[in-house]
Image 1: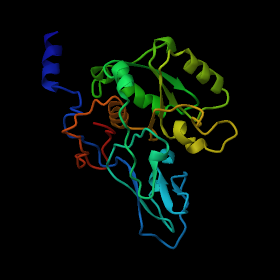
Image 2 (image 1 turned 180 degrees about the vertical axis):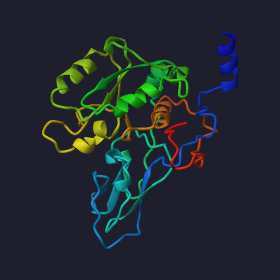
Image 3 (image 1 turned 90 degrees about the vertical axis):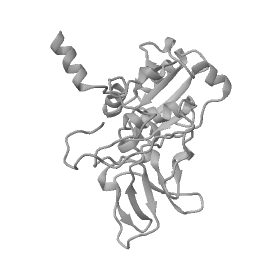
Image 4 (image 1 turned 30 degrees about the vertical axis):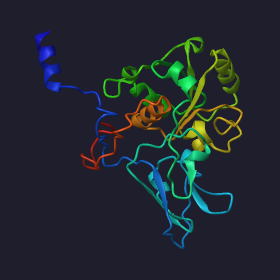
Length: 269
């Protein structure tokens, strides 16, 4: 017992200082994608629908469709795509994830009535609607000692009847649509809907398949879109806390320069 206590004392505090301190990522972390006007003559094909066009035909970045793969950092007639180190990319609207540069419209806080209900205690039910399992792994990581989601009053529950909102992952397969709808209907109103990952937002790599519905359609009242493939836990935390208006107004955590070599085996903090 004494040896255990001594070891824990030596290890110190493992929980991330977020949102009251700087954020550190490994060198290979890929954050918010950006589009630069510098273009190449050759046509490089992207593995996703990341590069799209606005209503007036201008090239744009759809962060909701991004798979955050190195192959997406391409140079073509539409411009040059590169990844920044900014983990803040959750938005309250689907259109907020599309822009001519890559900048997103960050999530807005809930209105006063919803904030009074969910601002201090939020219970969420997670539904895998046809995911590969990556987003679920990151959701599980939110509960570990590093990210400790419960310190913000947010917890996952087993029954939708105990939930304030639903977190949807996966491209919404046709076999899961009825189950997803029943889960949503079982939650008491008012309720929140949160789309996590490229699949839930746009279909991800399964986009266009006859077996999926390309994520949550416009028929679902989505309150928060959290892009990523999968999203980093801090991207999810940042989006949730913005929705609940829980981020300090005087200090916004900024991504720091990498502190690990590119070959490091550690993926997160």
